[in-house]
Length: 311
Image: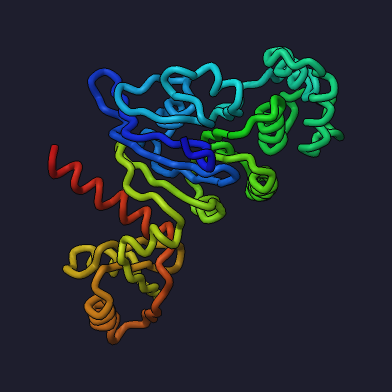
């Protein structure tokens, strides 16, 4: 067993009603690392997370979570992990303090009052500790959920799209908190749809249709795809995008507001295509760094085409 790894799973596979939703996924998460788990809805993220923390038994595959076997020692894993579900699941007719006290009793904590008080202070909940949860904004509910996850001092946090529906300021504060926890040696596995959050993770994995398509740092994932990207600014970008999508040498086009991102795997050929197609127009082109969002859109598009062709 590698003591540096919080999660070490190999070949995880799960099917429901004869449909395979996770297909031989292998992941490693180091202690004190924030690991981002990305993919569209229905891609298999939640199922994979549940298998890794012992909440769901895999059909195939093996692994450990915090040194415990995911098949045989699921109870030990549950006692050592903080799991924050996608849907807020606390009691809205109780206060923050009452909710945390109830969770502390569920964990059979010896000094519940002190643990609750520490959690309230640590997550900045003091001014709202006696406010009914049903009256809180999404950001404050999120803080409560994180405080509840941390009550029993877990070594690993599994967070399933924790910032969905939360305003940008609250999301930023939440991520500052995650990095503070990671600096204390707590590992964090977080699933998210947001590309700005993906870039704040130490490492990333991208899953689509149950298959793990990319795994590594954002720089490693971008480099592995070998994409060159240009930005086009000007008028009639939708028409230009439609034309370029049918052009050999263009891997993808994506509209971002008033600009068009165009990517391909042959740098000189792509530049020639863009200069030819924008000649005599008001459009301006410039080379750009390929972003993690460009790459994930490319991976999803490419894999989607392959799935449709094989069906």
